[in-house]
Length: 320
Image 1 (cartoon, rainbow, N blue to C red):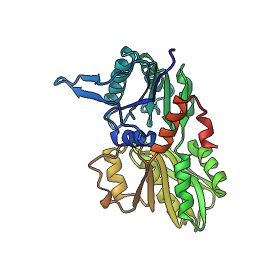
Image 2 (spheres, one colour; image 1 turned 90 degrees about the horizontal axis):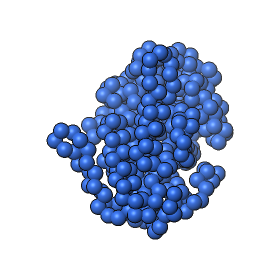
Image 3 (cartoon, rainbow, N blue to C red; image 1 turned 135 degrees about the vertical axis):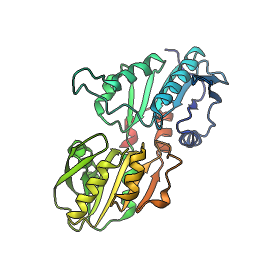
Image 4 (cartoon, one colour; image 1 turned 135 degrees about the horizontal axis):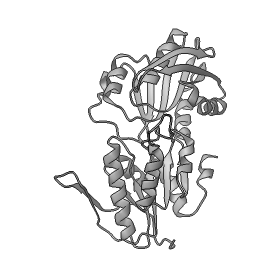
C-alpha cells in the first residue's frame, strides 16, 4: 500500500449526509466533492469531483434506510476512489446492515453479513470503521483491519447527567446481557434481564424479569430497534413489575412502519434515547409519541477515530 499524503478526505453517500457533515466539521474541513445520481432505470452513478491520488479516503455511508441502495452507493464510490489512485480507502459504516444474518441457523440460507463483508473488500476498502455491530464476530468476517467503535461514551455521559435516584440497568433479552453488565459496572448499578421469545419478525413476547425492578429507574440497553417489539414488550413487563420509569438507550434506529405504529400507540417507555448513526425517517412525527425521544450525536467519536486512523494512532485508547 502506498503512503498517504496530505489531510484525510471525507466523502459522504446519501444515506446520512447530516452526520457526515458533523464529522467533517469536527475534523475542521469540508466534505469531499462528490456527484451521486441515479439514471432513469435505477442505476447508480458516481463522479468524484476532486483529485484523490495518494490521499487517505474515508467514505461515510450507513446502510439505512435502504440497505441495498446504500451498499451499492458505497461500492461505486470506493471503486471510483480506487480507480482514482487513492492510497487508502476506509469504509465508514456507522450502522452495518445485514448484521442479523450472521449465521446459518437453518438449511439453505445465506450468511449475508459475511457476503456484505466480501463485497466491501472487493469494492476497494482497505479498512472498515463501524459502530456497535449486532454481533461482535462480524469483525472476523473481514480480512482487512476493522475498527469497532461503541456509542457507549456518549450514552454514559447522557445517563450520568440525568442523576437518577434509583437506577438499574436492564437487558431487554439474554443476548444483550454482557453489554448491559458492562454498563451496570460503569454506572455502579444493579442488573436485571428480561426473558423473551420471538413470535415472528416483528412480534415479541416478554414473559419474565430476572432481578428486582420495583421502584427503580430502569436503564434499558440495546444495540438497535426497528419494529420496537422488544423494547415495547420489555417496557410493559417492567412496568407490571413495578418499575418507576423505563428509559431505553439504543445505538441504531432503523425504524420501520410497524415500529412507528407500535411506538406511537403501544409503548410504555418514559424516554427513548437513540444516536444519529442512522438518519431519522422524515415521516416520523416525534410530537405524536407518548414519551420523550432524544437523539445523541456520535459524530465526535467517528471524527476522532478518523483522525487517529489517518495519523496512525491508537483507536482503542479512545475508550479508556
